[in-house]
Image (cartoon, rainbow, N blue to C red; front, side):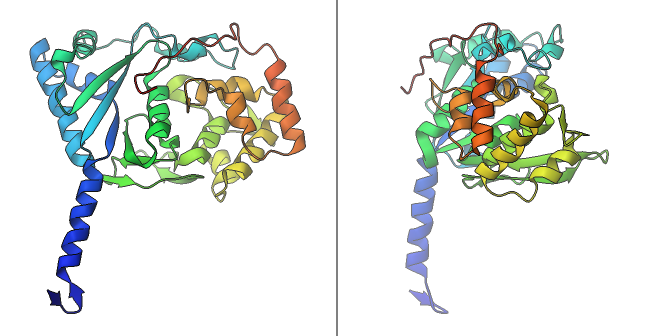
Length: 312
């Protein structure tokens, strides 16, 4: 049937194809945020389990995905040895003795049990690497068939599909990425972004949530949000972003590997930030500087833990 020049049958067919394509996508879900929210509101473990299951199903519905892997970081996780890095600040050093909801750990432990899973999802607890690492690894494994959902801004570095909680939409791939300015409700300047360039923005300004300092100074200025935006806001190429940021580290001889190791999320089980940085088209000066940084005593233990992921 043709109405006003539009083939209605063709439109309906395309809508059905799009619906099926979305349903075939797999949700890569950061389960720690929902666990905190659920555990903080209830007193009984069975209620928490039921509410957690409902939260996952809701997020599946909102993203249009047909299945999910829920990732959790165990409280004893080695965190890819990040706490052993000799960086400007101790990794997540500000989190010690922070109060947590009493039901948080019982809920997380309960969700490791298959009897608490539903047909739509499975749960993976991580002991060697963090849930963030496992999520990015899975994103690279699935490509355009995976969608990341996380409360943690670090996951915005993914070059693949990402669920934007602000707009309620699945954002498309960002092979290079971008950064931009946003004002918080209190009027403070905030850097937002997507894709690999967002990683380089964090390399400048650090990450207060994980107690990562970032670059001490860029051309003599402190590297807060304003300085970060001045360097990267107009950049749309990941290689250009890498060179601009490494230039800043090289000029003050700050170890780019140490800070990078804390911020880089693994893309495959044997990944290393040195390999990731060197995969960029760097200037000769920056390549030599990165190699020099790698040779310095930036980590108290250099051996990686063995990582065994369920989709290997």
